[in-house]
Length: 302
Ligand code: CP
View 1 (tube, rainbow, N blue to C red):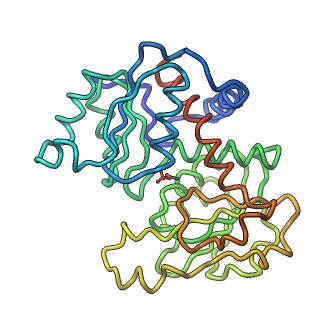
View 2 (view 1 turned 30 degrees about the vertical axis):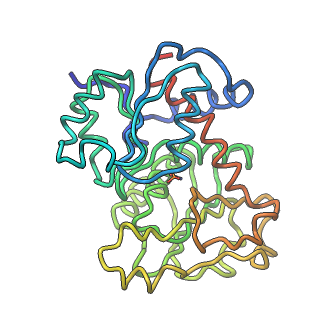
């Protein structure tokens, strides 16, 4: 029987639920070690590589007194022998209380949620959605800006395949944002997200230039060009180093501006930016622990 507590897309949560998660995460940040998940088992099924998402979900569960099972490499699971996702979900849902899943296929998490009797948390499905990343991005934006409303947000890099920026646009639609999309022609924001912005009265502009183009930004959200999504690797080679943010480029940015990046980074942020007070990406990743404690607690009804 399908469950109704899954988090598959950020649109599964309304504005009040998003704000409730952010409040809950603040509580976990103040006090991350509790025993509220004692006796609960969470499965982490990662059919694609991950460092932050998997380890922060697992840490979140362990710090709340729960237990973790799962795999970090599909090659070590029976999917490598040809087992279907349907059968994998059926089996794991008889062992665990919730499943955190990353999968390369868009829609895989929605499919899993429709067949699973226990909640599914989407930890990224292809180029589609990454809702727990979006919630930690919102938490980071609120912590650094003191609000979510009326912010200028500049999204940079791989806007075509970047699932984090797709989820972020939808989530920010509750908070009257103003977007600037900066991407080369090959990696432009997909039309469906521009249509979403137009329908929801969200102003946006598009440009291929990064330098001198974020002076009014409150948030500069950098993204990695995702080699694993390209069918034509020659195209990847052409665009892989299209933007590299340097410390010297930050001189004219607003004092409150903060740089976010879902990480991992490759060449898009030079390490000389790391010591600038505007670099927030490592603390952003740390915030993921508290947000994921809040998400797991919510889907388990705790
Ligand atoms: N941001 C993010 O999803 O990082 P990982 O791929 O390391 O989980």
